[in-house]
Image (cartoon, rainbow, N blue to C red; front, side, top):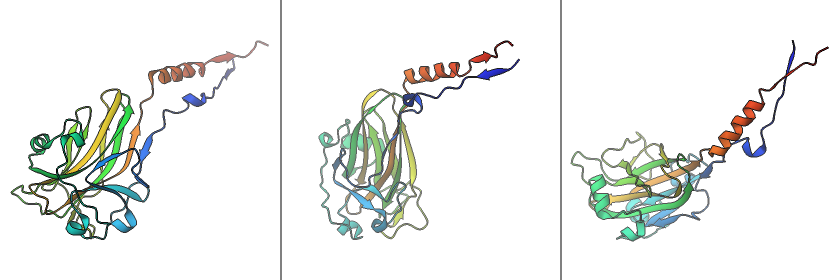
Length: 243
């Protein structure tokens, strides 16, 4: 007995899950909140290559023409960033306790997104510094991230970071590009913040570069149900009419 199989094309709305949102920091920082010294840098003039496109955003704890002197437009670095500026319940005592530092000047970048539980936020980051790593754990400048869901973690610290053998000419020490990932634990509005902070003084600056931030949504339950239904239909078998 011969069989024929029916085939079905997925409806356009079900053919793929929600498109990922990617922020490559190519042109401007529209939609982002910044504090301190934050700017988009072109890889061709700044130094490190980009992981997406040709630019990335750099958070810097110092005045670049004084502390780094690599030709960027001078931007004064404000001191005394307050908890109200940062939000997320962050203040000096919170950062000091979390990272075992005496936090000084700080620059930060933040944005609020609408997410569903299970959505993933991935990003690439690089730590750059002119501080000297030492066994006494002094001047342990720190790059970190935080979310309004209660996440707070160090990305890198001067005395524990892994550095490239041949850093860019702009700094003495530079990590390779690293990848980070955060999973949304709840649905709703989520604020994501990146920061870099001086420890024990602001004479020597450190920087955090961020690139290729992507939010990947999990499919809605209704999408799974619809796909399952189409899968069943696709297995329908028609018998050949009797001769």
